[in-house]
Amino acid sequence: MAEQGLKKWIITFTVITASLLELIDTTIVNVALPQIQGNLGATLEDVAWLSTGYAVANVIVLPMSGWLGSRFGRKNYFLTSIIVFTIVSFLCGNATSLEELILFRVLQGLAGGGLISTAQAILLETWPREDVGIATALFGLGAVVGPTVGPTIGGYILDISSWPWIFYVNIPVGILAAYCTYTFIRATPKDGQGQPVDWWGIGLLAVAVGSLQTVLEKGESEDWFAEPYIIALTVASVLGLLLFIWRELTTDHPIVNFKIMRHRSFSIGMFTSFILGFGLYGSVFVFPVFCQNLLGFSPLQTGELLFPGGLCTIAMMPFIGIFLKKGIPAQFMATIGMFLFFVFCDMLSKSTLSSGTNDFFLPLVIRGVGMALLFVPLTTLAIQDLKGAEIGQGSGLNNMMRQLGGSFGIAALTTLIHTRQGFHRNNLLVNINENNPAFTERFQAYIANFMSKGYSMFDAKIMATKAVEGVVTKQTLLLTYSDAYWVAGLVLLCSIPLLYLQKFKKNVEIPVDVH
Image (cartoon, rainbow, N blue to C red; front, side, top):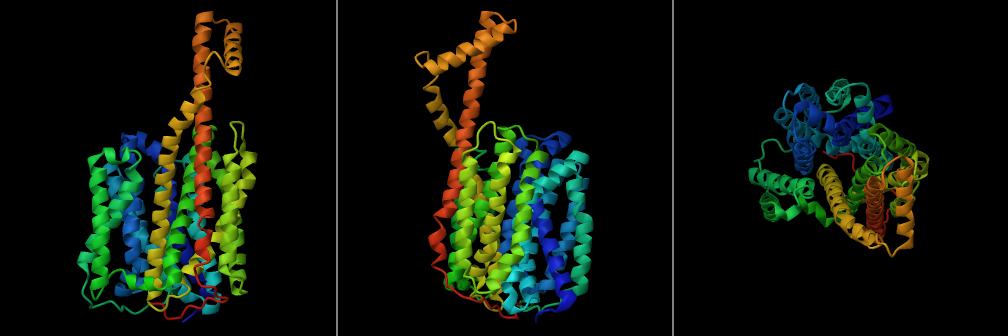
């Protein structure tokens, strides 16, 4: 039964706040990794497990969240997830060793996995069925803006304090969300209570999704299949996934209901959510690396650049919900969103070494508008045919696919950057020879410049050679990042036909009983 008046808005604020906790923590830790590394005396490879462990735990719980909410009651599960997340955030800030911190981050990821899909299901239950587009838009505020503003918040915190505070800031927010959840959210029946637990399904899900996420997170840094454990995890993920699907289709009480895949819009929607994750997380990954490694921006400067685009997303979300309510097809809005994202990628692919902060304002605003036009329509299209308890299951699977899409995007773009560096470097080195007048002129100018500063001819030639090497390296990186932007943009652009395989509906109605 939908809520009315002030209570509806309090619940909306509560679930958005709780989901923001989880989503911001997905990216906020990344900017603090160097400081944590130095403080705890760890290597960069070891400290990277803080992000990997969180992501792996998160993606394991996401598809199970619908089943857990049904078994223990959605309100109970949501409240427990918030409380555990808040307590573990305190423990993360108090950790005295890397091993402790990784353990607490894994626990944080397990608790956080229960926040996103459960929050979405509660929000859909709270709003009237005719306003489902507005409800989805409000939920999208957290889902899209969270990963974007995470680095900004992290940069500000590290600028004025130390790394434990990126965890401590969760505590007051978590306490507020827990209080509001306990006070205002209506309890739902424990439909799954008393039914046997599919322990085989849980185990196979953990092996399949956990192994896959670990491969995606660590594959590039470990040179992919050069490492035996990456090969073993890849085999485990494939076998685990096949066995998990077989198990869930044959058991009477599955933890993931794959029968909802019979809905065409949902099946296709899972792929479009995957593509959305590819673009959302992939672009958030590439842009900061590009700005900091090539243009010399600080983490705080980079985060501030992303902020206006996030504000545009926030401003657009309510209008997207209104457009959906008025009957504008979600396919049309998502098409515009994918095209705008391609425009954003195309503009960034034309960046130069002299690009400044002003050059990125318009592309990032376009990205912000595009993401608003993507998230709400894509989510609405995916869930439009789901009924009753299928909503919770569908939300979990849909969010898992977006998370996996982001992991695939980061892994694919990281590998692309690595391989294309060698390609572009070899092409540029062809022009570094005495028969090239442009090179000879530039090289002699470097020598003359260093000699004018008092260096000998011998030293000036050495320094000129190093200067040329620096130019080649920067140009190589510039061309490589340009390729990465193009690939990210083309993936979304080529996905537009998928939208028109989903059903057209003027008004998406979702039953009130979604427990």
